[in-house]
Image 1 (cartoon, rainbow, N blue to C red):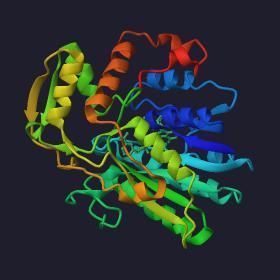
Image 2: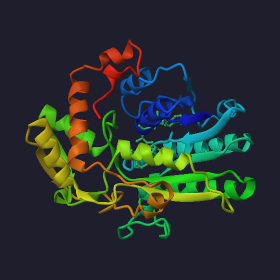
Image 3: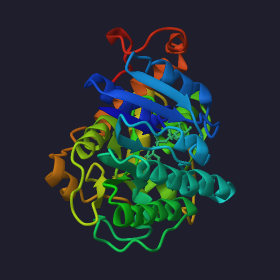
Length: 338
Ligand SMILES: NC(=O)c1ccc[n+]([C@@H]2O[C@H](COP(=O)([O-])OP(=O)(O)OC[C@H]3O[C@@H](n4cnc5c(N)ncnc54)[C@H](O)[C@@H]3O)[C@@H](O)[C@H]2O)c1
């Protein structure tokens, strides 16, 4: 069984590839290793994925011929995670979202269409599609009021996927991720950029007095949910479904800051600011659908997950992973914390 993972050098992609390799799959990973955040982190992740059953290709999913050339009959699953992520960046660089999230998603759908043996395409959507809805968010809620272009592109992906499931019978699951965090995480996300600023003694900007709430989901719980869904392609008509994948509780940004202060043993210098229009007040996932399908049961409390992130982050900042750029990966002694 060969699985194609797009965004393999990214945060979630890295962890998903690692889990697939660990359970014995052959994996083809693609990524364009763009510089939305420091590519050194992406390359370090890739170095740690070196494995006889892992092949990596540098491909931009917005280049449809390059994506079409990935069609090989042995592919029976796709986990499509490559995207231009981030809510706020979509205000300054909207066309990056059109290229990666709209054209790129379509290129992956066309690839799936060219693979008659493909069992399942699992793709990343986002909790941001719920816009200003009142939590908890359920898959049956109306989602036609996105608060950012990022959210609008993710919702568009869901629509395009529906059409392809209807027209061509491509079995698909769209996963609405809720604020994923953990070791090897994303430097543009608040928990990571806060940790960097706190360690450097720089102020952090916290919106609305830290009262915004997020359903923070630890990466290991996410990976378990992604693989659980990948193993269970939908068989309805059309063969498609959407799944929330979150921690099923919301915690305040103020609590997050306190946990980071505790882990880093430093006080944060907090600058308060009003909530930007693209940021929602609260996210909280109803996860009953994915729980019923896969037994998904997120088990990592924020305090524990943040402690694991901070342990990894300190090592990363100390350069203790710089050897990752030179040596073989996947050896037990070189795993990140968590
Ligand atoms: N992390 C979260 O909290 C979160 C929440 C909701 C949704 N998501 C979605 O989950 C997916 C994975 O997110 P992540 O946190 O791992 O982000 P990430 O930015 O770390 O990973 C995405 C990867 O895709 C690659 N990529 C971007 N555009 C590409 C293109 N045109 N061609 C090829 N590769 C490209 C990037 O280089 C990056 O390595 C994304 O689709 C994201 O929108 C993530």
